[in-house]
Image (cartoon, rainbow, N blue to C red; front, side, top):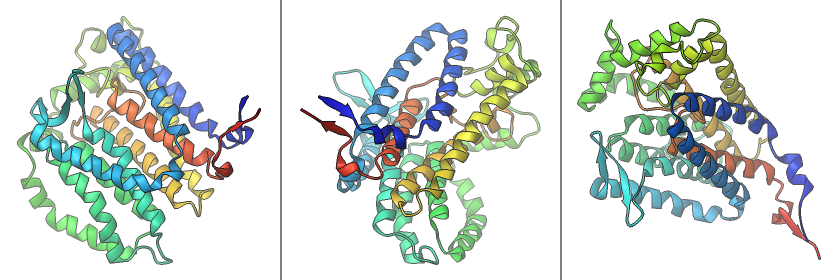
Length: 368
């Protein structure tokens, strides 16, 4: 007879589930109203995401740490393969075609969990000293951060590349790096900013230009109108004219926050932000109970930072405070790649939290 060890339920972080499930349910309601076909597809993504969560939750991550470097370099090879065998869509080469199954793979999405795992592995193997990491150690870690950044930026997918870059250095900031290094980096960025801008692609420069211009782009104008139309309490489905008459572009994915504001008003938008804010604060607070567990600290800090960046950038672009980039709202925007990626990340995090005392390496006891 197989029974589940009760200590798993004791250490499982149910508060994460309490915060994430309402976001997913709210998302499904909105997508169903906008497009029933997309809603049925999204329900499939929910099923795949849940299966991935269970798989990575039950995977003995701490017992296979030796495999993490190989996983990281496999993903680097996949990113390199995009340059030679990648499929172009809308001017960007980001996907690999999987033969015989008519399915495409986006290596940059798979890189996100592999990237965090590699960073956690390196920091666990060589934790910082009292004054934080030295310049030599910092440069060693930076290599593993900058390598995927340049490969993804070259696709081009500057949004995803910058997210990995910011997440990586945010993790190092929390774990500990000598403050003189951060000051030097800030000065270097300020000096090199004009050179970095000149090396951007034309469409990336146009997004920045549209953002800085007095008159926002068409997408942003329609988004702002939708948000204003919602008022405090929102409009009924038939009265949400921006979404109902297709004036709001990409209403179920990139601009779903504007759609949310039009349907449920200021109160609905603030409620959604409260769930995200509580989730981020909760994840960061876990670092206090994981003081000596650098591996788990990297994962919690990395996931919290990633959610913060995704939410901040997505909402900022819908109200004209940031250039329009393809950054979805975690667990909320329509689409499978982002949803499954975050389910994988949270499955790994729950594994590290639940089984951090190891239980002699067994979470299922077999009794006869």
